[in-house]
Amino acid sequence: MRDIFATLELLKEQIKAKNEFQKVNLTQALGCILYEDVFVEKNLPAFDNSALDGYVLNYADKNELLKIKGSILAGDKNNYVLAKNECYKIMTGAKIPQNANTILMFEEALLEDEKLNAKNAKENNAIRFKGEEVKFGELLFKKGQKITSGMIAMLASQGIYELNVVKKLRVGIFSGGDELVEPWKNADEYSVYNANAFGIYAILQGLADVEYLGLIKDDLSAYKKLLDNKEFDMLISSGGASVGEADFIKQALFECDFSPIFEKVNAKLCKHVKLFSKNNMLFLALPGNPLASLVSTHIFAKNILNLLYDINLLKFDKAKLADGLKFKGQRNDFAFGKLINGYFKPSKAKFGSGMIKPLYENSYIFISKEDELEYKKDQEIEILQINH
Image 1 (cartoon, helix red, strand yellow):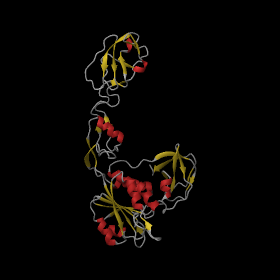
Image 2 (cartoon, helix red, strand yellow):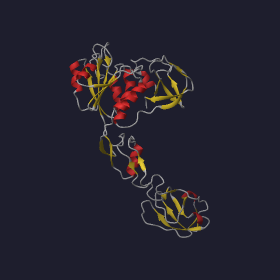
Image 3 (cartoon, rainbow, N blue to C red):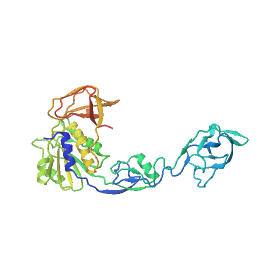
């Protein structure tokens, strides 16, 4: 039985990227993944321009009284040339005239007989040079980058309104178990509200087109009908992943010709996670206990989507331990905690697979190696973010 880290390596071997794209415009692009490299199409700035309102001059003339030739406004496309002992008023964003190399802000300017005394001028001041931010032909963004609001602004500055992005994967989520009741209904004392599906949905909704398929009762034919659905790239179940007598998922998977990629993980909380495949669809079976289900979603579901998108596995952050940790070993174990000034501060609260509070009271998890029993204070470790 593989541990978490070996299972993730197995996924890299077994899961092939979908390599499908769609064209979107900038109003639809936020959160999408670039399908291809994007290159600079326009220098930024596109021309030498002023970073503030002031007087534009040649620094060599600063000790002379300068004739004010006129004003240059933003948007003025004329070509102006400075002669000896001349200057212009210039507005922010306006084009720099030929022979000028510095700007004196209005607040520091001195006027004598309607001429400029530029003795306060600084050399090479307040000029934004053509291409100083990005230059034509340079790589702007790499294939596989997730598009942010800042990237959208930069793409717009390049005159790029439509672009190719990785086609969003479709994920269907359902929960199994006759004991479950939807949160908009009334549960009696011995029923359980369906928390898992909505936690999974929240974790994945920024990564894929996620659809909640509802509660599936513990019935073999109901599971088989669901598995015939070909609309999704991945189905995710919560519940029905253990070895209970009424857990029908595994039987339904085999009868529908799904093949296992892995069926157990040597880890606390994740032991009963299973992954199956058939043609172009994956089926991820998660445990029914909330903490086990949602931690497994962070570790496995998110990484599976990354691989389908042809991007790297989730990045672990480096930190130092604020307090020592001890584990029983022989499997992966967990510590929940927070990252404070570069130190991972483990929670002292006990946790069980049926809990939910550790997920919102903490922001990171530490996953122990199966053969390491003790981690000392100040030791460098790697942690995974679970709360943003």
